[in-house]
Image (cartoon, rainbow, N blue to C red; front, side, top):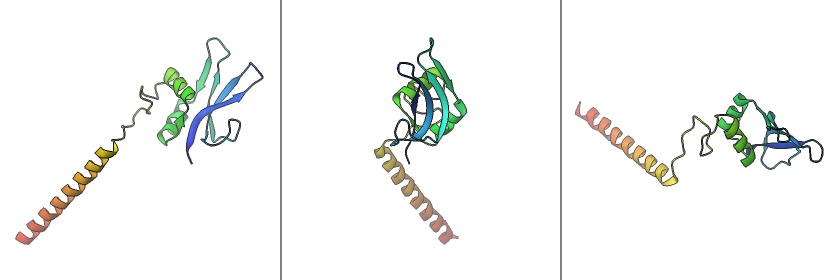
Length: 124
């Protein structure tokens, strides 16, 4: 189940306001949502944005991805996202080639440790 943090539209024509909600990526704009984490009204000057930062941080930590607009709002009004779009406190994923070399190096070092342990046990 892929989750997105996205806008859910309310209001009359030309008087839109939005709830910022967590919902499945494939559901419709007006469909069911998991949790409401904020409010956005672009019609006020300046625009009104209310975000529950604790809940947004939680959903980002479990893998929910914000839409472009919500990502812009989060970057502008909180310090939860870095400039590259990752949640604060997360490490970048290594490239696939780097992951393969890390796994290969890790398995080789484990094998060498095991052989050293066996050799030391045989000597004693």
